[in-house]
Image (cartoon, rainbow, N blue to C red; front, top):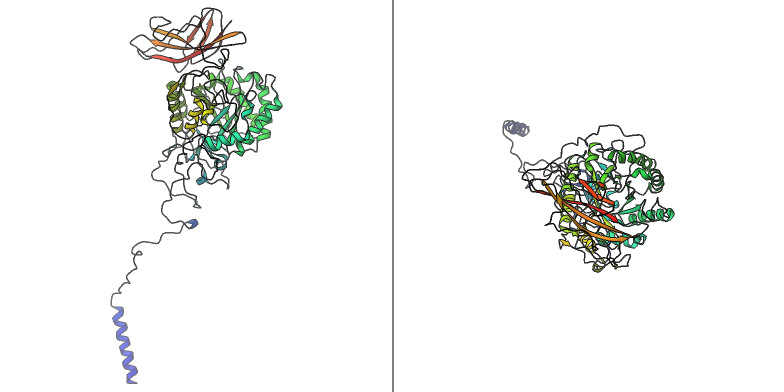
Length: 593
């Protein structure tokens, strides 16, 4: 019993000592000290930032051997987020968020019409099949696009593809993928489908996509020209070329632009009823294609106003929306798609997914037209360059690669899509195939023109060289596309003023001529020089053509015929001449006899 009592007393003494003492902590194992456990993220990810590097351009696509074309390696695609199951990706601290879009001038936050279409600024629904991380040619944009461009990683975006970008839409001033990221298309336009149908073939479209790097093909359907839709052309054959072209583009993972190619008709309202019937027909047929954009009036010209073009556009857009409620629609602007500023003042707000086209030819259109484009972009206007060339505005004449490279730099910096003219072997500077080449696919470097070699390099992200080259000579003296100047055409040098009024002098130079249908056609370049020490706010020139003539076309000025003379005054954007400065890139074509 004494032993039991002694043991109990000992136990009580021990317990009393523990209650009044300090507990000694257990030392943690290495790596556990002081750090709370990271919370689990969906998909088994840790809390570390994700790797932003994306796939190289062209990953996941096979392509034939490129030895014949000697194509440089495609540049690495800009950074895109990793594939992730995370509902909200971690913030990228290096990427500032642009301010919210305030909309294009003149727009209001109105509900969309019942017939569909997406208002600029709304992000399209994202299908489960499109993964943002697998979308080359895209870059993040804010939920609402607008005056500020998104932060674009260094390097050029590869052209967006239907397989990754899905059906396109318009958000603010940007063309966007189905998951709402800014995209850029690059490609080539056919010449007139009635004239060069042989280039609409599956093998060539595959080569354009896989070997050249094209992500879009424009299908140019002339309206009033010979063989066109409205001038006795075979409509059944032309429709088949359109549908085949869209199918070949889809099979080659490219977008297709269906182009209602007005030109000599000038005002798109000239054939409005035919346009309505055409677009109702093709949109009904192509509504489920997913890779189609509609260009509803190629180059409004001849003094047509934006109000007239806008009125036409509203009717044609409504016709397309009957079948395809959200396809991207490209609307031409006056003066051969140069007057973007007029669209800025009165944009189309009745429908969404609308873009406005700009056309340039690098040897004619330089800083002033680039400024027009940049001003329109700054104002929030969505711009699409649906046609450009690296020669002059006639489609022939001198090539200027240096100016073309300047244009491409601005387009890339501002995520603007561009399609080059033309996929043909016509004997003119704009053609990408040599006039002596009769192939319709399988081209080598020797089969390409200078324009074609430049395009091949441009699509693959390399600078071009040399900077300039004189135009190719026609195969026959009477080829209407040839640049050789015929004798007897006035063409003073730039050192000898052709005329002036004391304040300004002007020089007229013949740069091109040809014969067709018993008439002689001549193309002229006009330069106006300020001879004073002060800035001039306007100018005029009055070249004398020396006999009876017809004014066929003109650009970068307002032209009025008076007897044997042409009175030329400035366009809206080139009226001011700095002291001792000059205005160039004014041109026109006349015919004699």
